[in-house]
Amino acid sequence: MRDPYDVLGVGRSASEAEVKRAYRKLAKQYHPDKHAGDKRAQAKFSEINSAYEIIGDKEKRQKFDRGEIDAEGKPKFQGFEGFRGGQGSAGFENIDPSAFEEIFSSFGRGGGQSGSGGGARTFRFTTGGPGGRRASAGQPEPDEDFLSSIFGGLGGRARGARSAATPGTDIRADVGVTLEDIAAGRKPKVTLPTGKTVALTLPRPVTDGQVIRLQGQGLPSQSGGHPGDALVTVRFVPHPLFKAEGVDLRLDLPVSLDEAVIGAKIPVPTLSGKVQVTIPPNSSSGRALRLKGKGLPSKTGAGDLLVTPRIVLPDGADGDLEALMKKWRDAKRPSPRGSAFD
Image (tube, rainbow, N blue to C red):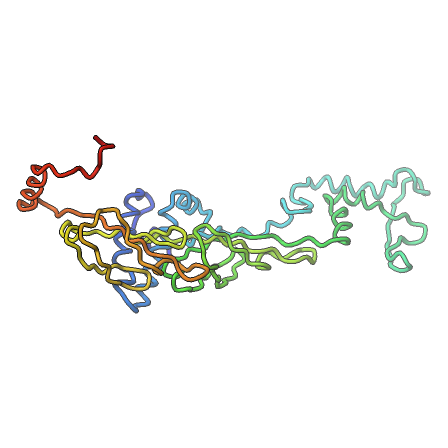
């Protein structure tokens, strides 16, 4: 994906409010409801959401700015660092070269036990016999613990490797998914730190932050064991209209005062297209209407869409409306708050 700052058209010094405004403007412009069947617009909408997932999140934005994650929110894979810090590593790059000279000179000193009084002490190994490896005749077998002291424990690990192989290493990745993709049952693609891209099958239901384990997709074992796993964290892409609550979705629906008082039929967006919703007369702002099966996939079907009317008054002064409201006030109508607020 392109640089998320470029996708949203903001600079790196943009404030959180500026980033949010830019996202809302673009999300509204390229929303699939306005571009039915336009795959380019849908791809652009997905790219906008992915970009906002990175720089719209304070922590992820800091990580991206520091170069710790890429434009898709995935950790930048550093690869293997040779022996340094690895399990069972010798750490050769940290050893003073003079130490090798001291270590290997002990082979020549012979500890005062050589029959030649300090001559060179040579080890020659051959294979054969019931024991497998053995020393040449008249030559002593080197102590494996001594080899361990030289090579940072590799000798000891070699003994353990003969008895049990160690598994590979697990890796982690994030994948951003839109609510539309979840509702349609699409398989999002995730690129793992190994460079491999896989299509992810989402469980029913799936929740924001859920971790999915991909067995055998991690780093390989170095000693014949099973490869590690890939642990993929699902991140819901923020939606400009809907908010997920488990398998249910919530949507705030702006309505005018007359629509709330005398009722109306209003087209309402869902993840699968628009539907007509009847606003009953005398509807109070904040009382949700439930649309069955218009939420996210569940084990047995789908959740619901909860549509909450929000009364919006017209901009500017309206003399007739003000006159009506004064008439209501003069009539001393009962307070909607009840006695608890008196």
